[in-house]
Image (cartoon, rainbow, N blue to C red; front, side):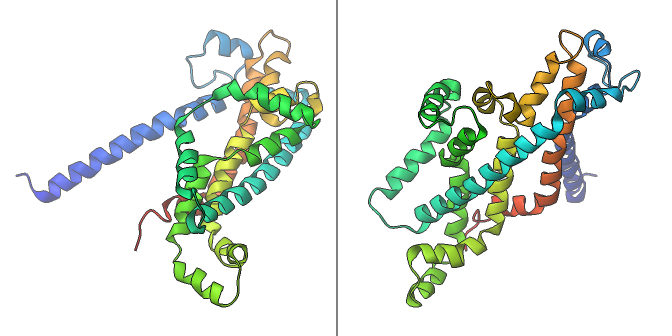
Length: 284
């Protein structure tokens, strides 16, 4: 006999089956990359549909570490990512605070104009103008050009998340601070910013992911200065660094190594990441 308890059990089972299917589809590319990093180049080219390697070749990692100059490339990636994350956290939280608490003419229009850019993808069309601007100030051959562009290019998603979080903070706190003589930006610095830890973690993780995996812009800016290349650019160059015409085994080994920092960051800050995304979604 069909009961409410049975219906709830079937409903939960269907939900878990769907979630498990999504999990498998999401995790498969990562698992395949990791397994393929232990294959020989011949096996990748001739038996690429086989997930588990017939013979585990650990020398791929040794060769990738030597040929890619991982130590220098890793330092470059960490250097670039740390400055971008720090800068974007400042610009995003300040913008979120200004759009949430500021009172000036055209605020809503400006905010919705920025928000509308979320649905417009210019792709690589802006690459040449950015390179020409960086060339004028002599930043077209270093990572500083990439860092400055990424910091001051408004990230709509980060501003949207920061504004939503600041909106969830009671305005009575601001009013009490004004009574004590705090200015608009002192309120942000001493009161709002310390309360923004969840959204700072969220913006930091999202920014770290995009900056760590950024390829095209760092490639163009470091093309004439290979020693300044970040890890992702160096990993892609591994494909042509071995004895074969296309050394996929070395590139996949380097890719597996480059994924480790991102996985660790997500694992450590996952709780704050979820808190930052959900904060401000419910009012009252």
